[in-house]
Image 1 (cartoon, rainbow, N blue to C red):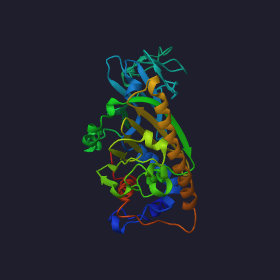
Image 2: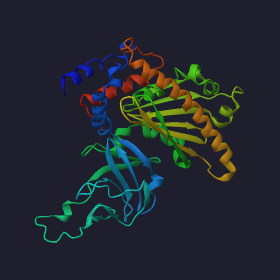
Image 3: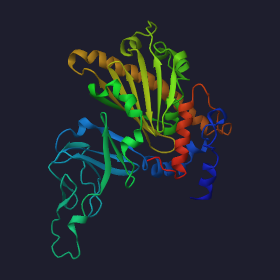
Image 4: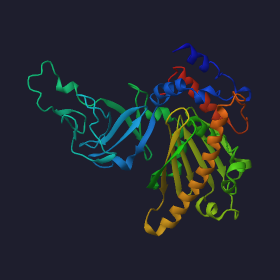
Length: 370
């Protein structure tokens, strides 16, 4: 690690208790060296949500994605086993699966025709007669750790990581009673923000601190005074009782139930749960000052009869997202100012943000969170 990067990492004291803690410093949000280290240590070193189980429900179903700069292929093989591989041909490194998703009996590299089974084994190598000391069995697609939880597919780029269930810890037992498996996937939307990915996560984890000021419609159906924050080892649960309100009709009709639950899983996955409505947010870095937030929307019913309600719910999410987008981009601009280095944290509201910053520091300082 170069001296400059070591100095930047040293600006943050991850041992300070919440009442004495500062936020991570501004250079962590703007320095390209930090962004590069995060790709390796954070996104390449933890369990990452990459898709949904419904995308690989049947034999031969597959989808492709990218994680930490690596091309990824997830597939349900002929025996029903869910597998993940680097989407890289072992011959000359082309992608063997070129579509975002689909159904396949095998994967044939479009470059030179090398053929791979759904289990990753190398099946065919055209015009390879005469090649010496070539072991076909050791030239299959390179596998990755893959597992599922609730509706979601996770992978880990780390060799021999601890299990996904170990990483989730008691978050599993907190989520199970909320019956996420009873909901059906509806649609996906993606937003690009001109801010560092951590700015978006910070905003999510401020314990509702910004809600009365920025999200007045959402605030009208939450009991802000009884908003709670609970930290696990690798997750935070923010939760609030819900109240009846006529201040915002769109919010009132799409955000119902006894309680709202907002789960965050380190480093970048969020699950927002209301009665009959759930959306997930996956925050992906696109550079030091840009990120993409992918929303998946789930509802109890996704038939034509309920489409008006579902569309209204997504419109409500869009409104809240627009409000968050504007403030996150404002924060990113402020982080480059000579007037700002780091801020203090609210003991009442920002325990989740404190957890995030400490876990991030551990990852960047080679203390694996996998």
